[in-house]
Image (cartoon, one colour):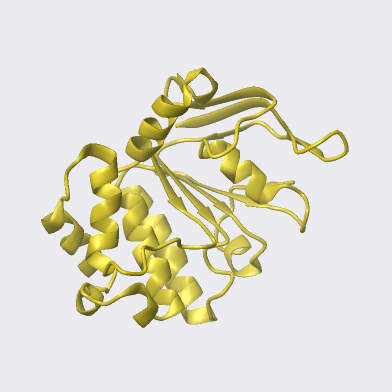
Length: 208
């Protein structure tokens, strides 16, 4: 479960955001919507511990992210939060399998190769395992990002505009994958989007 209370973030004296309180339980999906400049990505980065709030609380389970040092926060994020960002940030010299193995290794010093292969097959990437990220389509890269986000069985799955660059068919595939896999892994799912296709698909929404 993730809960926020009285969350505020300031970039400078003129640009700041006050965010609505939210709660999202395991297997539930929540959409965060809003126009450009409303702070959607900032909100997501706060929830993932990539930014620190000026005030307020972010609780994942019974852990308050603000109480953690940078080192402990990095470790907690690796074990408990899966991130699907707009930019995938793959290591270009590593193949698909190795990129996901790296995420696993950084979390708990285990490669989990067999588990990764199974997850990639579930994402219809069996034939792409040994390819470089640059050899994949945008939709395939997005699914590799999902595999990387899920490999450590996170409590929270965060996705930033996961379908914005996809056609209708692949957007539906990714939306269904995120929803079904979050349920399978017992994770809360929060998606930041302006994509009307997702707004029509997920009824639980917060608009900024």
